[in-house]
Length: 381
Image (tube, rainbow, N blue to C red; front, side, top):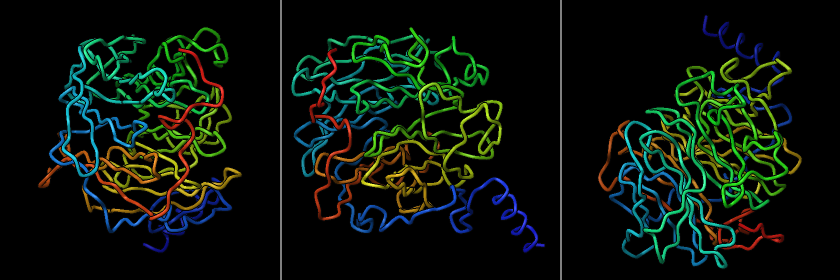
C-alpha cells in the first residue's frame, strides 16, 4: 500500500512536469541544479548577536553593518551590533498589535547615505500603513502609504527596496480571499510604490500601486543577481509557495492553491506542505534563495541558476532554533536569521527570541538594492 502511494505521488509529479524530493517533500521544476553547500555557510557555528527579543519581524542594515530590527508586538525598532548591547532607537506611533498585526516590515533606503530614511510597515487599529523616519528624529514619522485592510491574520507586511529603487510591499488578503482577485483592493497583492508613496509610471496597471495579485499572504521578497523578484507565500492547507513575480501576474488565490495548469494563473516554482514551511522572510546569496520557515522550523536553501532553473531545496537548521521569521544578507555577506518563538505560536527557549549570524569566511558581494549601496540611477523621493 505504501509503495502504491509513493508511485501515485511520483506519477502526479510527472504529470505536472515537476520533480519530487521524497526527503524534503517539495516539488521543483525539471532540470534541477544542486544547492552547493547551501551558500557555503557554516550552519553549525552561529554567532548570537541579540537575545531576549520579542517577535522580531523586519530587519535591514545600515551602511556601517549594524542592523535595525522591528519588534512586532512592542512596536519598537532596535539597533543591533555584534558584540554590543541592543539599543532601542524608535517607537512607531500608531502601531497596533494583536494576532498577526503590529510592527512588521522594515527597510533602509538604498540612498541612506544621502536621505537617511528608514521605512516601516505596520498595522493600525483600522488599516496597514507605511511610514518613514530618520534616526536623528525618530519621533517625526511621515506616513507615505495607507489604506489596505488590516486583520488579525494575513496582513503580509514585508517591505523591500528593489534594484530599481522602488519599494515593494507584500500585503495579505486580511482573511477575505475575494480581495486577492479584486484589482480595486490593495489586499492580496504585491505593491510597488515610489519612496515617497506615489505610484510609479511603469506599474502594470496605470495609476495603481498593484504590481501582482492573486496572493494569500506574502511575507518574503528577494531579488536574484539577474534582478528577478521571488516571493514566499503561505498556502491555506495544502501548499506553501515560492513564486517568481512578474508585473501584472495573477497567482491564482483563492481559485487555486499550489500547482495549476490553468493558463490564467502563474504557477509557483516551489511548493511545500505547510508543516514543512509556513515561509516568511527570504534572501538571496549568489544562486541560493534562503527562506525562513515558521511552522517548519527550518531554513530552506533553494538553488536557482542564472537562467532561472530552480533546483531541489535543502533544509538547514531543522528544529535547531524553533520558528524562523526573517533571513537577510548583511553588507559583509553574512547571513542573519531571526527566530519567532515569542509570537504566540511557538515555544520560547532560553534567550529567545534571538538573532543569529552565519558566515562563510568569505566576503560576499551585496545583494541588489542593499541598504547603504547607492543605486546606479538613484530614484528621487
